[in-house]
Length: 345
Ligand code: AMP
Ligand code: TRP
Image 1 (cartoon, rainbow, N blue to C red):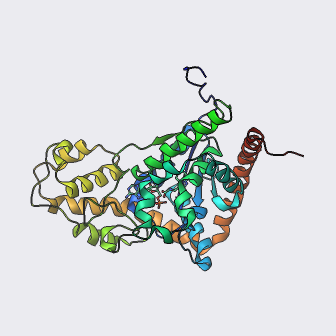
Image 2: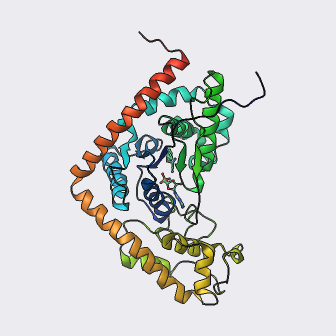
């Protein structure tokens, strides 16, 4: 082996991301994921946006609700502005190649790599031995989701950074072990802007999350204008006033979070926001923030309700998206199996 680095991937730019089909979406998902997917659809590159229902079942999901949860995420995609003419929108489980490639990658990834995954540690809690094996190998399926389409960029929230690093490690090891230089790309995470790590409204040190027992900690996509205003009004701040610049916020996590939310919702930088409110208390800022949040979320909530009332439209989008996805995925898996050396009759 020479010291020279292997030839880089030379395929086209492709963007892919997904959200789990496991319950209610919140403002963190909107700013960290949905809003950013929509912003990417007009750049002219192929865009794949799926519902991760196979990831959802790594923890128990009621079979009577799972398909409905899948439709709900699809409804959120459409209601946020994703256009099925520009993005393939599909359920992961409708493309069997995800599972096929995941198995091969299970044999490429090392136990030591998965042992380092912090999300598994958080999700498995004190009772690791009672977790599903799927929860442990979850990031390997995620790598398959991405590399199946040879995606080069993956817009996600900050919490997914480690899974993207693992994806790159799997791609590099596969390319190297099977002497297939440049076969899989080493995808880059797209994690930029103030909305990539939205924190709890009650605790600036905790991520806004659907698993937080306090509903006041998050703004749900299903909250009405009143609930949104109340939650923002009651959100934790401190006794200080708004500083002149965003950089002065390092030891004020709750205030920093509200400013980041404001910046992300209004497509401004933190400094533009602080400049507008400098020296004022939060009594003036919070109603403005609530107004912005309602303005952004109310039309999405209404459109999600409309779509969910007649799932036929959603189902049509998901079927067409799955077919598009399978058309890209099938030849990649066929080629992967050939590289691995599987029997071909
Ligand atoms: P999940 O609901 O965990 O499948 O997350 C779906 C997407 O939302 C992923 O891209 C996450 O990184 C993103 N996300 C989840 N929670 C947050 C948060 N609090 N702030 C920003 N992005 C988030
Ligand atoms: N693990 C991601 C999350 O919890 C969801 C996901 C699954 C994903 N597969 C993906 C995101 C592939 C990006 C690309 O947010």
